[in-house]
Length: 446
Image (cartoon, rainbow, N blue to C red; front, side, top):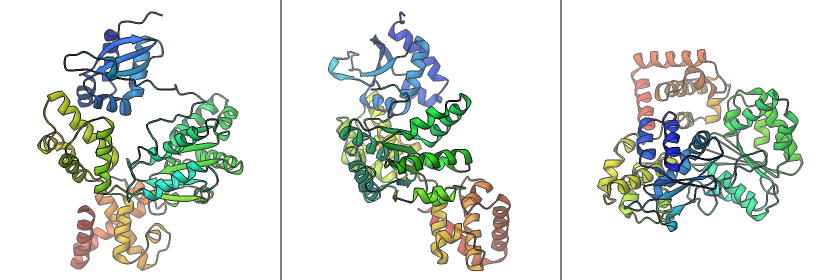
């Protein structure tokens, strides 16, 4: 099959991509690019700077590959080449971005950029890192399963894949497989529809190392929980290693069967906390050094001070700043960072989590968080629980049902009753109203 020239193919690819991303993203990351060459079914795309290559690889590579392959009517790989100011692209600046593998049943789905060497260790993640490294060095002999939980963008996926890459490197014949719980469910449904359930079970139960991301996706999915249960048992009984990640500990996943809660806690449960200032700064320095960019210390400190929520947003700010500097030719300074990141930093405060609200309310009333999520209805527990429900409803975007699910599976009418009761009491009880205001200030001030 004869392929169209690179620029024509890329223009048609961009037309497809434009309908799949928002306008600002397209203008920022796609419009400044052009197609260079097609060689051995690899489309080379010219980008203005290394940061564009990093960003496109991390966030859009699958979309780009699928769109380009659709236009070409043939499977294409993608590489990125960094342009010089005059448009010339020497071979030495070519940045290969072709995936080493295409995904199939036998692939591990591991990305080689996620390693222990590239993971920045700090106070908030050192325990999880140590546990992950111990598992990687001796699978199925230390902690099995390893269950890592924490907020979005804190490095759970990085650790999960680092374990897989370490095992594959040290034991090339070991069979490791990474997937998300959602993908596991989609494959399970597909196997049922196509009567290939035996192949599906064999695929997941024949691994030496199974890595499942976002296991909290199991919430309220009975059939999926059952399949995970039997897969877990098959692997564990065969002495195979299982590693799971979630945004919350096992016991807090809504409607998770008790037998799964128990099994997920058989090994070790480790949490990851948001990085402190020193760790955030080190993450930014590491990324800049990896790309060979000299960035002033006061700039990394400014970004690290302003962006506290997660690593993904932290690195995104750095890439945006470097891209703007590269395109505009302006020097990287704190003033430029303030200008470029104004809209991001203005809204960089992390959203309140139910767990945070439960923790603050429990601490204020001298009760445990577990009690707030439990079923006891004594006065010493009922009122703090109602206050926590009220604050969750007021300070988050969760629905009544979603709030109830975080308090032992209470239904929406229970949450509505709690909110009405607290609101009415605030109107007539000034000391009580002052207490609620104090809790709100404590929560919203960070």
